[in-house]
Image (cartoon, rainbow, N blue to C red; front, side, top):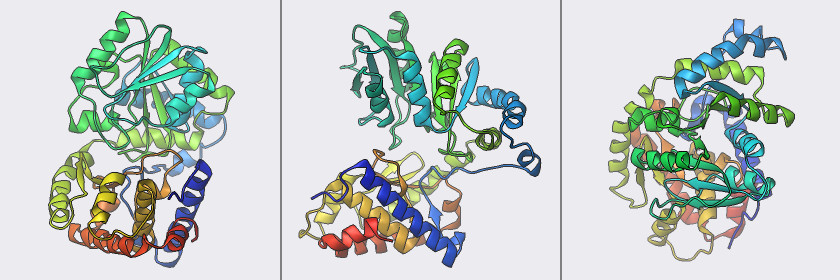
Amino acid sequence: MMLIYSSEDEIKKRENAFAIIDDIVSKKGRNYLFDLTGLSGGFIVSDKDLSLLETYVGPAIFEKELQKQGKIHLGGEKVFAVNRTSSGILATILSLVKENSHVIHFLPELPSHPSIPRSCKLVNAQYEEFDNIDNFKILDNTSLIVITGSTMDHKVISEDIFLKIINIAKEKDIIVLVDDASGARLRTSIFKQKRAWDLGADLVITSTDKLMNGPRGGLIAGKENLINKIKAKANEFGLEAQPPSIIAMVNGLKDYTGDNLINAISRKDELLKILENKYSMFKATPTGVMIDENGLKKELDNFINDFDISNKDLSFIFAMILLKKEGIITIPAVSMPGASTTIRFDLSTNDSKSIELDDLYKKINSSFKELTDLVSNEDKCREFLFNH
């Protein structure tokens, strides 16, 4: 049985999560919330910055520094800021992909982020995706090759495969876009890989709130002629970032060092060890632990048999319990439609530093017990998802 059927249902769930967050902050304070999504970002601005946040003055002042810091972080001949990574992907596909042509996507593990196939559908392009290099092939009439550096669940591509795809694309003179939303930091800081630009990509896009102290937004870097086309298309449809986001991106890029990601490695090993004393559903990520929807279902089967809730809904419900009962924010509770349902506890976040691992274990354990009590009651499950 499914409780969440559509994108509209996911938005309703998200609005409910926001109402819960607002209630916690209003009644208890911000310190009672623990954002462990790895997407918490930040908004670093000074009083001087605020005085320049005008429609035309802001971009004129901030653009030079954005170019400097963006090239340091991503490489490229030119960079361009968009209001979300998804909007940057859309602008790229609108600009560079021809109708009835192919977009070929390689990622370390399926499925892809939904923004890529959805954008292809808008331009009536054929979309193909692969997660096995042995099966990877470029079809005739291919306009664009997309490589995902790190998946929504932080599965990271190997540099050897990355380079192999780049070389195949160059032989056929096809543009390569790298979706490095979190990979621009995860691949480089933890896996010690080169930047996508240095590996030969034509374009790379990253999320400025993922694993760094920046705002919700996207930054594209690459060849100047391609960025110019994307920038023009983005401005036609209002996909470009606005001055407050741009200065916060600049300051977030200046602030980023990668130390938080490296320091999270030892803590995640310790947390995983604690959790594995009772549960088998947890897996390590580069910066924390996670539970996918199938692992959660399998674990629940060890405790209770009398329930008929879809695996995806189980993840949504568990995420909402973690939020409402324990103040823990995970991606499925607050995600956009189509995002991964994997529940991640990311220990690189600022909030993770303020909670002891034993206390985090207790919160997770208490929430799982609540889930076992809840899943056999459809009405209560529905209430948790949609009714604040």
